[in-house]
Length: 444
Image (cartoon, rainbow, N blue to C red; front, side, top):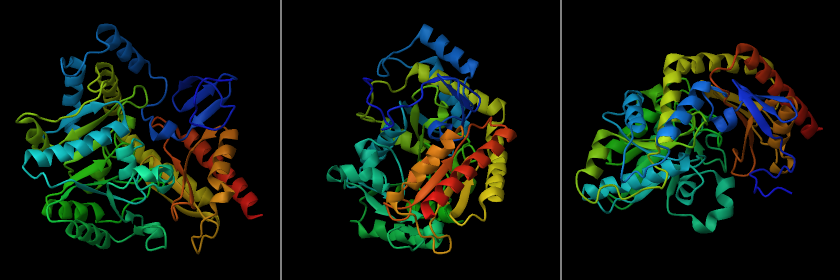
């Protein structure tokens, strides 16, 4: 019996022993094509020797020094190299150990900013239904992913939510979704105005929603309209780029598709491509200056924040992304993957929509395509698709509850940016075969 408390209830998980490019091998020698990049994490590919070397070299010099006593060359170099890619002026980054920590840091940073400006009454944060911002309690409360919230509802309720930017299910009962940019912006403005004057601190959203809504792209005009609402009301705009950042959607950051410049950006996942636990919150120059110009400063911290090894790894991953033009590769290969999926599944009666940007591609599954009726959750359709794809040697990422918080199935794809065209063909074929088998059994 294992002493590991697993994330999966599967009692017989394979043991991963080697990984290279887009492939992971288990202890029995079986190869798996990683069509999900783990959890939409791996961008530069598995098995990068240069990343391992940089990690070892930094650890051999300085593995750990507390951030209140030291900075490091690795961190200073990384921050300087990352800054030109961030969608904000004069950015400053606060590195942590992952996406949930980064989101918690962003929330505290927003509060600290308003306190520093003498606006102590600003504490309310608004997010969207159908969102995901992390699994720590603050980030989970911010999230609008109902299946994950449900076990912990007794501890939640601090934050407020508006509709998801989800055109596919706009206006459907239980979906909490709208599909028109003007309607969505007007709803946010009403939510801000419904609060006591000057009490809303920030609005948080994913530029393109990840696993919760399977790469749902907002309607045209949404992000500029939302940014305008926030600016007019003195509300900080926080972009959750944990999944969309570092080229996943075919641009450096997801908001780049709309030329929007947030006040705060949250990053993780692709920043180190899974090689080291790392994330950050990036503040625009105005926000950073406000919280650091006078004591007490930004009252916040984690034991493993500002980690030298993490920064060194992130710096090498950044170099690879730049030198190998992998952001552009994500855009081109993402278009190719969507084309393959549309060719294979575009007319399938149980495929409601194929969507996404770059190498973040979602497939929403439905029992009735015309009515967009979801399969009942009791069918566990997503799990059947994931299992069938895995048996065929293709790893995909699942999502549930899209339609009403309980029902609704989807698959999210996010292979490494180094994926080959032959592998893209295999991904499309493997997923199509899995969907055909699972849906045929479900409707039989």
